[in-house]
Image (cartoon, rainbow, N blue to C red):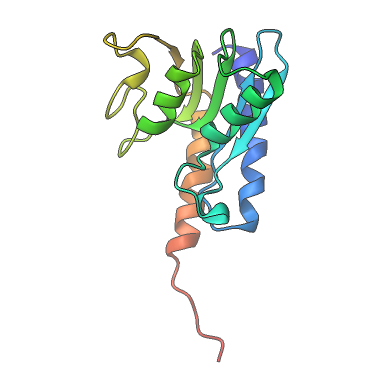
Length: 158
């Protein structure tokens, strides 16, 4: 595994901390520019914003596009703690992002190689190089711990 990818995944993991104030699933993402600089950071904000499109990847892509003043993110890398879903993989393709690095696999809704493979769909106008399983154990553990906490029985303190 590439040391650069592992370091970038650390930044995506750091972004998950921003979800602690809400009940959003702890997923973080960064868009890294061709020179290795972070152009955009995102974290899940669906619950916080009441927006079904406020996934970490979309937030990071929006931030990077705003910073660059352009929708084409050619030469950039999207790094995310969980395999992108169909919407996020599609957003990445539409933004012309040539590389996606992700941590944990999403066996229920992943669209980057598990359930679907939007990123490498040859019928689309843009294809993406995928680096899967980067710091997978850390990313998966974060999600498991979140869901264990969410599903824990609540005690009535009355």
